[in-house]
Length: 143
Length: 143
Length: 143
Length: 143
Image (cartoon, rainbow over all chains, first blue to last red; front, side, top):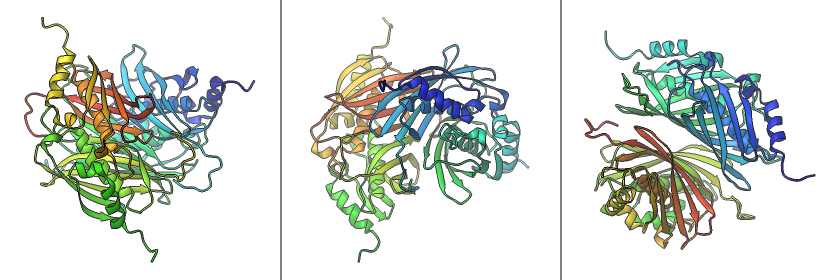
C-alpha cells in the first residue's frame, strides 16, 4: 500500500465533483498518470453565431482533459494559463476526442499538451496548459 | 446610408444565433466598433472539481466577447487561436464582466484583448485572441 | 527616504549588467514604475534567411522591455513565459520602438504587454509576458 | 527527379542566408522533413541582468529551429506567432540543444513544438510556433 498514485481514483473523484464537465456531457475514456483521454459530442447548445462549435466549448473540453491529467497524481494542481490554436470548424453532432499528455512536471509547475481530434482522426485544435501546485494553506489572497 | 458599420446590429445578430452564449446566460452590456462588454453570473453547473468556476467557462466568456468585438464591423472573422492567464479562483454566484478591446485590426487579421473582472473590479483573467478574415468562398476545406 | 521605488535607478542597474541587451544595441528611452520604452535599430546581423528581421531579435527587444518594466520596482522578478504575434516583416535599418506596459501586478506574479512599432508608428509585433517573484533563497533547483 | 523535397538542401540554404543564426553561433545538427535539431553555446554576451541566459536568446534559438523545420519542405513559410515557457535559468557556457518537431501542417498553416534541453538532458524551455504559407506575390502590404 501507499505505492504509486492511483490515477483512475484521482480522476474519478475530480470528475464526480466537476459539475461543468458533467453538464457538457464530457466522458472519461482513458486515464493514466499524466495522461487522460476524454470525449464530448457537439450539441446544438454548443454552437456559436457561425453555426459551428463555440471555441469556448473546444477550450473547455481541452481544459478539462488538462486539469484531469495534471491532477492524476492526487496532488492538487491549478491551471495558471493556457493557449489554444483552432484548425478547423466543427459541426453539430461531431464526436470529439481530447488527448492530454504531460510535457513537463516539476516540483511546482507542469506543462501539458492536449490534441482535439474528430472520430475520423482529423485534428481540430491544439491546446497547451500550464499549472501550478496548489499551496496549502494559502497565507493570503495574493495573485 | 452605407455609412459606418452598425456594431449594435452586427452583435445583436450574432448573439441571436449564438446558442452557446445564450446557454451560458451571457448578456451584452455595451457594444461599439471593436469593443464589447459582456456579463455572466457563475452558476453551480459552471464549477469544476475544486468548487471554483471552470476555466473553460471563463475562457468561453472571454472568447464570446472577443468574437463579438471582432465581428462588430459586420465582416465575418473567425478565431484562429487565443491564450488566457488566470489570476484568481472565482466563486459560485460571482457576476463577471468581460471587456474586449481591439489591439490591432488589419486587412486579414485582428488581435483583441479581453479582461475579466468581478463586479467589485478585481481582475480574474486576461485573454488575448487572434482572428482571421473568413474567406468567401473557401475553395477547399484546408487548414 | 525609503519612499517610492526608484524605477530609473533599478532599470539603469539592470541595463548595465545586461550584456545581451547591450550587444543588441538596445537603448533605454523612457522609464517609469511598470513602464519602459526601448529602441533598437535593425542591423545586418539581425536578418533571417528571408532577409527580414529575425523573429528572435524582435522577441529579444520585447522581452528586454518586459524584463526592465517588471523589475522597475527594484524587487527581482523573473520571466516565466511569453507569447508574441508578428504583424509585418521588418527591414534592415528600421528603428524599432518597444513600449512595455503593466497589465497586472500581484504579490507573486505580473503580466506585461509590449507593443513594437516602427518610427513611423506602424505596428510590428505584440508581446505578452508573464513573470514571477524571484524567491530568495531558492531551497532547491526545482522547476 | 522532382521526388520528395530535399530537407537538408532547403535548411542549408536558409542557414547560409540567416545572418542572425550565424551571429548567435547556432549549428545545425539534424535535419529531416518537419524536424530540425540545433545547438547553441551560451556566451557572455548572451547573459541578462540576472547573469543568466537572456530569454530572447533562448527564444531566438527555438525560433530558428522552428523556422528551419517549417521551411524544410522548400515552400516558404513565415512565422505568425509563438509562445515560450521557461523552466530553469541557464548558465554561461551551457551547450543547449533545440529539437523542433511538427505538430500539424496544412495547406496554409503549420504548428511546431520546440524543446530546449541542456547537454545533460534537463528541460530548459518549451516553445510552440505558428507559421503561415508565404503568398506569392503579395498584392498589398496588408497585415
